Length: 257
Ligand SMILES: [Zn+2]
Image (tube, rainbow, N blue to C red):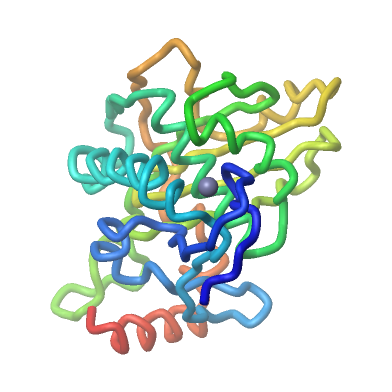
């Protein structure tokens, strides 16, 4: 029998259900979706992230509606890789997008036991779009493909390495000039959403000025961005590491892709 505890979103005591970090539409279309890169071990580990502290009402209602919205964005926009230095206009519903980004980040935070308190503050906004979140900026960076340094004509090596992966994680910015800030990333193929949170009374401007991408302002439902960085520059830690690449290949083979 499911245990009765407070739901992580609505706080009501209920039997709890399992919620996936990523919606099925994205899981099914991302070959390495449940591989997570562990820098220390220089390899990918398997394990789909789920949490089990969400009531059925939230899970099958609002949260699944937000997943449906992100699946529509996936079909129309995220599935198309952004070529380097070509401006791309992204059209979105600001509130639905932000609610989903916060939901995915909050789920990932609970699964990894980090940043839970920071994300929990936005649980009522995630559920009904109110109140408008404060002390938070969302930025969009587009990542392009990189030329593959190992490309050789006539071999299996691809000419370009495309950004085809999903990631939801905490980011440490080296030399972050502003204490009491939290930075999280939600990446879907070319689309890298940076979420920056700061504590009451903190001026996050010096940090925001150093981050890539453009802010998604609350009043705006479209933005034009050009990819400046490629896959290799962003993920040099594993893309250029032969041990890590071997582990990714093994992983993809096992998953039939
Ligand atoms: Zn609930």
